[in-house]
Image (cartoon, rainbow, N blue to C red):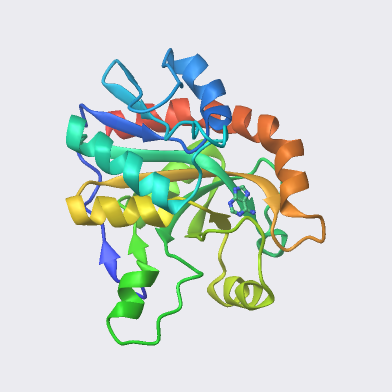
Length: 242
Ligand code: ADE
């Protein structure tokens, strides 16, 4: 029996409408430049049947609306408006040096979950963790990973940039490769709407390193987003050809 609770629909054949979800405008900028898309605000813009959804800046705080709540909000709105054939999440993540990852390395998500959801009630624990297998099969993941130079594995989500000691033990036990703040929320929405989902993460900081994640994140953001943008072009080509 698989250890995840939900399985998303398989990759569609020749998807027409692709919805790209990127959490931060700064993450989206290099890719939007390459694809000729507009990064500003929700609901995003369309070109060649690729829609870009970025939750946008909060007008009070002036910062990107990061995290699971805004990810679910923006993706739900976009799905209702555009009924995509597939959702593709591109974004940054913390990576794990103990799993052989380094800065700007890429991870294709096989599965995702909320690692900080603790609910000691049967049924509700599984709902809160939302452990979900993404759409590409193992064969498709291996092919894409070798094309892109990416690793394949668990990309786990939470509401925090930093990490607790308990979470570090959990990540080691589950051999987590990447840690972000949106993917499990996107997977929960895609599961509820039965829409296929693929995710590519780029490493900006190493979760199991003594340097604070925030410092490494800021220093490596541009380099990692360039690498992500470079890899997303062939990823989209492969997905649309499959
Ligand atoms: N995005 C980039 N780095 C991250 C980290 N360490 N945790 C969560 N989200 C991230």
